[in-house]
Length: 145
Image 1 (cartoon, rainbow, N blue to C red):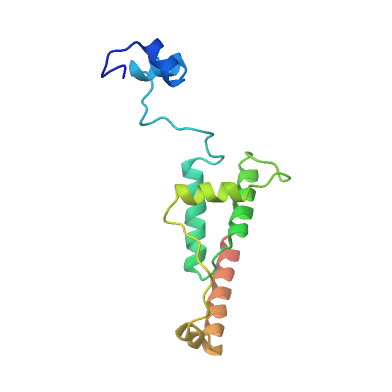
Image 2 (cartoon, one colour):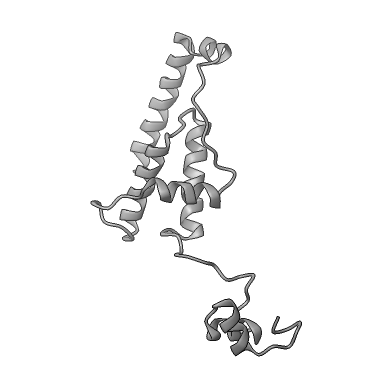
């Protein structure tokens, strides 16, 4: 109404019960309403949350899907490592809901029964080959480190 009808910022602030300074800052362009974030900022910044997302996706690709509580536990431990949280104060389901809103590619799914093709690949030979490769990798890592 200030822009379109020419009423004063003071009058508009009283009409709509908006602080005058807030309205004035937006009117003169000091604050961009499209970029303004309402509420508290997330505990972890976007880059830190992206690291969590990559970890969760990598684990899912390896066949281990975290439950929501496990995601919260991993994120809480990460926040402790970053010095943003103490061990006695873990993240909550409210944090998880916000996390899922911020990262729509992450979704909660129900675990499915092991598919026949995957079950077939879990033969003794395939499992033994996996552990042989794992042992080779560990030996290589041990000799490097």
